[in-house]
Length: 227
Length: 383
Image (cartoon, rainbow over all chains, first blue to last red; front, side, top):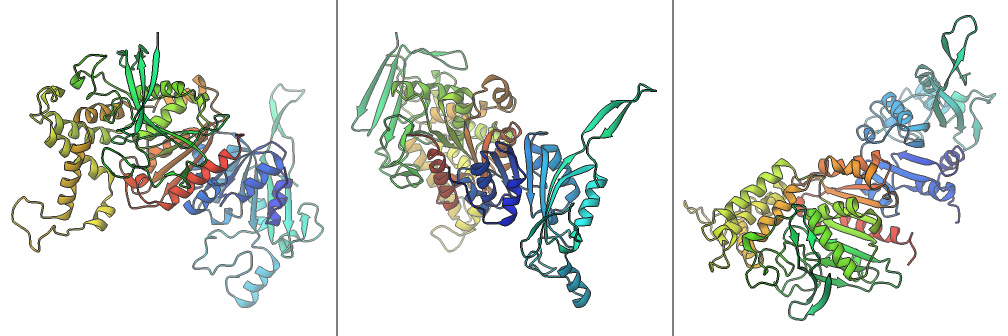
């Protein structure tokens, strides 16, 4: 089978985070190009959910499993831990209740992949600082009054929310506005300033019960630690 | 010993599968010793028999899915969907469509003769369910030597049959397209059916179903039943768009009970023309079969526990935004169970104001989705 070459750089990065033959749910899958890529390249079992009828039907005719529906209302139908990965690409900032969505992602999938535009990017900071107006960039091209993006947040905001929700960041990749990719955690550069688009691989903390000698009480210890 | 005969009827332009001593046991417990199904096929069955599609018709449909219906002289009921280069492409697929058991276009039903007797069934016909209708269809497929269906497709009562196929015979099907149906017939739908049935049964010409022997037809009752049902197939918007309050062949109201309004005239016409092509008893039996349809408890359980070999099935569920007879919400119940059990399901809600009847009307998005679904998935199997 010929591998599909991605039409978007972030899709290749998403693919690189996913193991072969996984079960994947893409929320806001559009016409299904990402899941089609993952199905072919990773031999994955893929599903998508998409709000727009026109986009959903374009995906269905490709032979993909796509449910037309609203991510904020229709995720309940998916069973706990029924997917290996749940992908939310460039959509979190358009959700009414982003925190609730994050909870849902990790209820349905053992891992979640979330990508979003970083509002902390230096160009956005400069636009707001010097123009005094809501920034308009290639990644966030809308005027404030007609944007689907209703929750703006930065890399730091997102990391803090994960911490608060006891979500582990297993991997995080930044893309600069020129498409240069780097690992956010290892970066010596100020990631929140140079990251134009961020891709996070998330999971819940796995609690490992350990025995303390003096008492027989069981305590929980994080198997992984956020730095 | 079961004895099956397939004959062609030139005049009726269809075939008959005649089952003698086949002892079809109905859900009610009654055994139908002999029965026959009228059917038509279109296209060519390929060598490996992987391209067969069964189309299940709705309440008042028949085997004349495409081409010309010799009884009415009009195009088949789904001519825009089925045919060469149409969404269900008969250049690629071998399409089978049979008149349901209990119907009145040639299959065994209330207007046909009893087991090799001269007397016709009339009101003595046994009570039917969708399950019985599907069981009879499997006998037809056996008779045609077709073990596997690439797809079972149906809208409304046809959707119920498609769902029943996926429950009872998952290993005989690759996919289903379920259009404007539900897990169960709702209380409101049963209510509308009951009003229609009461109209028929209160017609003095009905004679407890034995009107043929009494040389009468419950025309008035049947046409009122059709008028009521026809309203449920439309939507308020479509009715307003098409008729509004426009008057029929007059400039001012009559201050009487003539068909002043176009909508009245239209419904009267629908009622009148229906009587010419449909049997009142069939209407009673088939509406009842729909009322009895209920998989609200059993669908999930069957998928989970009884019929495990359903992971290969591709389900496509389609609803219409303006359909209030089988609304999106009820179609979605099926999708939610399938998604909950991680089955291969797609769901589409087509935006249209044409109501429940949308699946029979010009709806390009429906055509596009169905054609694409069938052909992309057909490409994934060997032929």
